Length: 122
Image: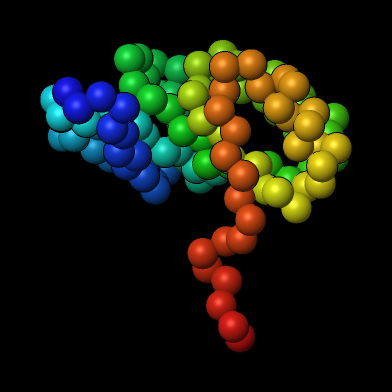
């Protein structure tokens, strides 16, 4: 394995079967593979349960949290059982919220989102 090389694969579905297939088909000895799960997956009928069973993988929750500090930190507490490695938050939530998130994040690496890729000049 190449040291410190990571690839993240988006699990952009709400289907547990599709997610399972993606994970099983992307085993690689050269790179450490991480899997990005978004709102549609975690809110699907069996999504949260599936994520709790993902073992020995890098789990990236792309939730783009953007709320008051208390709600954001309570969300981190609620996600702890998932053993996630990365979590996205909106930078626009403000400095107070970002500091609170960082303080409560523990081993979770926080990734700041500044803008959404779906935005355009129109």
